[in-house]
Image (cartoon, rainbow, N blue to C red; front, side, top):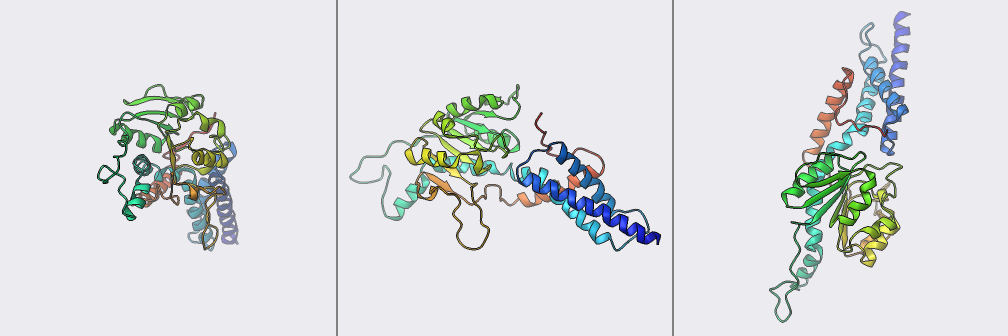
Length: 321
């Protein structure tokens, strides 16, 4: 009888953990911040999942599979909340590569060479093209100065670029080569200054459609942008119009407004970005690198252990004040 009661209690505790973990997981994947309710659900998930799996009475019970599931959900919830940042540091490589590819027009040159056309000083009977611009001396604006933005800034400085950035809270002290790290009030300044704009912001109600037609008009017509964050940070119609009209020199887009839900082709946007020759389109792979999966698994395991010990998880994102 007592074992039966323990089994029921054990199962209920684990089910609460599963429910709380799913709330956190889907909330985070939907772009919600860590508000009071989400923190409560995450705490509940940790306590019930760990208690459910390591239930102290009478050894193994038939409810243990439910406890094991609650631990899996806990891992997924922690990954949804904190693990996304582990793909971040590797994204700097995509951004740097995209900036070079856009600046040197590799796509157009490749297409012409395949037709036997030499758009270079080696062509016979035609003038040499203008000299290609370089990254050195140019300004990189970074929207979002977390793990991705800081990793990118270090590499951009190595290319002798100037860096300015915004984050949720302004940063008084900056590393050498970083002109300033301002708060949201400096967004328009970054857009005006940037020769290249890298977007690494998280999607939230404050950042959805943050870059609209007005803000796109602030950018230089010679500027390039690279988005490895979320497509919805840009107003889709305004972004397409700016690129199609030449108000922006070009873009590398790795994140999209539509994603596959079935087999077969899936247009990534309602606007025809595929028709624009000044856009590099990739299928959300900027963080998909050799070291990413191992680092994610290690972070999830470390955060489960830290949370079980009552310690603060790694890569904690502070809630809005």
